[in-house]
Amino acid sequence: MMKYLNIGCGSHYSVNPEWTNIDFISNENAVIAHNLLDGIPFGDQIFDFAYHSHVLEHFSKKDGEIFLLECYRILKPGGILRIAIPDLETIVRHYLSFLENGLEKPSNEIMRANYNWILLEMYDQTVRNQSGGQMLEYLAQDQISNEAFIYERIGQEGIELRKNLIDNNNKGSLKKTFRMRLSRIYRSAKKILQVGPRYSQYYKIGQFRLGVEIHQWMYDRYSLSFLLKECGFSDIVIRDAFKSYLENWNEYGLDGNNGIVRKPDSLFIEAIKK
Image 1 (cartoon, rainbow, N blue to C red):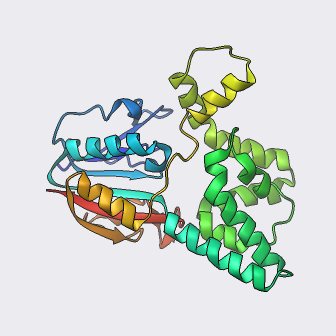
Image 2 (cartoon, helix red, strand yellow):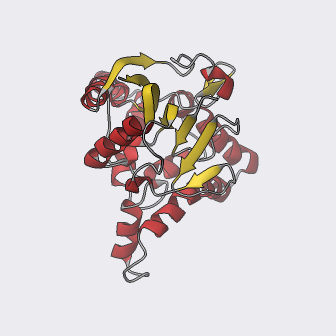
């Protein structure tokens, strides 16, 4: 039987017998709990396929390189690595477009709203000191003029969050839902840091920022392709949510279902271990 590994899986994993699922913490029997900063807890050349979605950006640049080397180590020769990450190139292209058009048409409120949102994508997840950051505040507004663009960027998760707000007409309900989604990250951070004055503001900020919610580095198709090559991978290709070296990839629905992409702001990339 083929052996597949889903790393940093969160609540998105397969229970098919070929899959092993691992994350910093686990609330499910099908998920192994392990601090991935300590490496991937399996022997060399175990897996035929390894996958992680929106995980790599939560490591520092140095730790990210070590993590990819770990992915290389646990794959068999000819094994496939599939990565989904926020696409820095797309964010920057959006930013430049909204900046230029906003300067030309300063009265265009939708352009201004799109500009503000893309700035949040660029910076909020790196500078925030509490869960959700300014993105949470933006999504909790009663009216969002550029709702369609936000759905285009953050997909089904954004739709679900906004639906919660509309159905309940209660900002607190939306915030509760958002924070529940991030509780996994909070608990992980608390396990990583267990020392210091527990009620100190600085300690809380440090604990949060050394956890795994914030983005510590960003990648585009150029930088990530080069890094994968440095780690020993070959046959590096840019994918969409539904195409893969793995022939039955779509059966698992990890990057999308029924033509709907789970995280449309992603760069999808695959590589093969030499």
